[in-house]
Length: 335
Image (cartoon, rainbow, N blue to C red; front, side, top):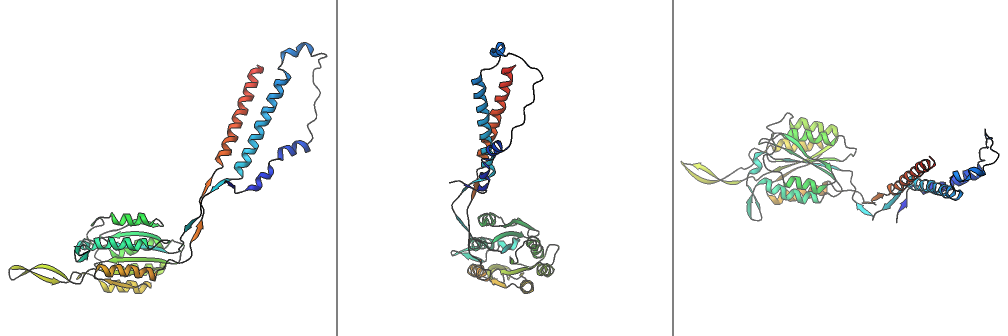
């Protein structure tokens, strides 16, 4: 059933009647011309009954306008069913490395070789679905860093944007510092104190304008905690030249990863550094982050509200238009 946000306004309904009863009518003025007998002119004007009916109609329209306007001012609302909304003060930004090295197939997914990016998308889906109640954003960085999704409660959209992201969209190099700097820029103005950045990379900073450690200093001043993840297998079977022919040999697939810098970035900002060499380890790390950065607080119960004031307001407008038409027709009929 509809409810009124300001029901006390309905107490004003009898106000016009009270004013009419309490206020004295204005005194009549004497006519400038006295006519001794109006009987010869009785047939020239409208009948008494017609004048009374028109007067009652106008009075009724005025009452309809008054009641409708009061109903609209009282703000009628239709309350929906209660909805549980998880609440968290945390703003969680995810920065993902999309450089060319993310195409290396040194991982396995369901028993088959898979690229690092393919594994990351699977783990990303599991992680985001567990962040109900957090505002989550997504930054992609390669040669350049850019914001893919701003901080939002719409986790489904953030996950879909990541799943649809192709390799190389941000360039083939790695701008870790720019990725951190961009995350700090979008986190520092948030009112919450728990600002968190989860940064995942498989390489070293070799592009961009900002060095990672300098960006970490900016994060410290902005109150942003950074968890860093080094991703990539230690060994990979490759075909390498050997004695004029090609042979198979195990090589370090993560030779270009700068773990020291990632460890220092996490230490400076109060976060932790994680190393993932297999897809299972990366999944465990992201699930471990759920324990390090839990979703706090009970859920809030909200009820959606649909405003209905426009219905009585429309009735008031319609009544006013009818009153204007009635007055105009009365003037034409007199003419």
